[in-house]
Length: 107
Image (cartoon, rainbow, N blue to C red):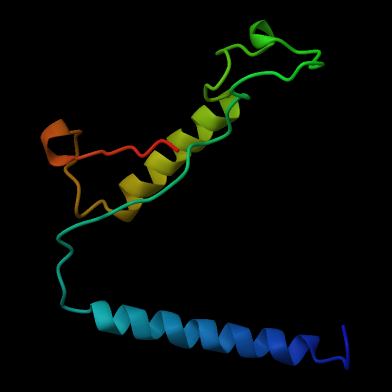
């Protein structure tokens, strides 16, 4: 760190972040959430294929090539739990597939 400005810079960022958060919360007061658009990437997954000298083959991956790993499955579960808490007043208490419009872009 040059010049020893680390602590003041961190403090300034914290104050700026708090001010920004307060501003966002005030701007949202009295408004009603009508639509949520989520963009996220898949969780951890196995490779989609091996390479010529790869000592591991598809049988070494419990779900096969290109599939979510146990960690990836846990990541998706935790994301779902977070979204349920975050949008608890927006979502029904039970899953209604007619209310969700998932779309997938595969690149």
